Image (cartoon, rainbow, N blue to C red; front, top):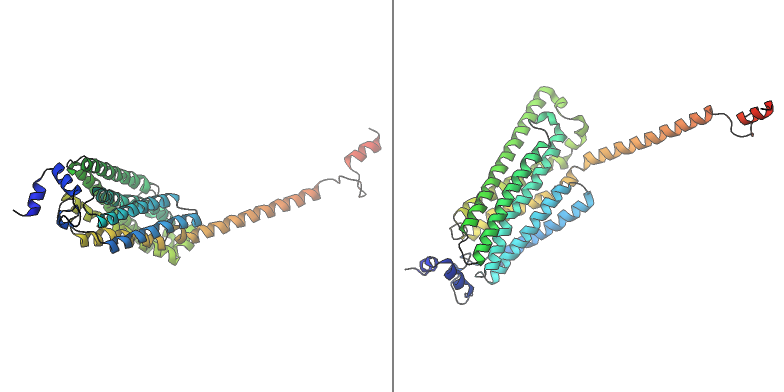
Length: 349
């Protein structure tokens, strides 16, 4: 019988004890948690890219001072990505070590749920920019629908990951936790699919109204922002990021549905292509076309309008003060006109 068949016929305690005693010199790499040795260069590159993206999101938030919810979601997701790839680099040194494996599988599974939340938060701003009349639901309804769905997905993945991790540390089967993680990922896939369908519906309705009504179908207050090249590029970037996370989530459902010893989870090339590459593209395009930067024309326009209104109010106050001075009686004796006090004195009252 093959050595691997004997290995996986052992119970969980025996398997954990066997791997704990293994090193790269004493055991075949096929008997590790991954069934391969994680690539140091590839995982280091992903670690560097997600660290760079994390720093960019923090800096962009400090400069724009807008889209706070988006920033919190993206920063949280990038932190988990950094932790996950740190775990994979730990596993390069020792792929038989349980801590690095659990660290990467939990963090990298959960992280895109935060990134999806950041994407959901931007749709209401886009609907307002084109005009709420072009949407079948109100702008604020989008985050109210999708953020709770994302929270449910995140909780399922976190609970499942926690249960699987605890079970592994106790030398028990992680299958129950893994199934809960898969349920959370599947729910995330459904949520992302609904989000993309509603975006498509909004786009189709907007185009139809524009064909019949022309520019009257769009909100005139945001005409400058809609005409901005940066804003249009942001729409493309948002669509690309959503698609990448969607494809990645489908892959992780298929991967984890086989358990922690399936064919997909033991294929490093698929992991690099459908997990690492997809998510890194999603975060980097949103760094390049950050909403705080791409929506700037709308805010600048609003800023100038507010500045003009303040100047106009000051001008009106000065004009009113001048009129009051001309209409009021003389308050001192410097001119020939008598003040009310002088009139009373002259009459001897």
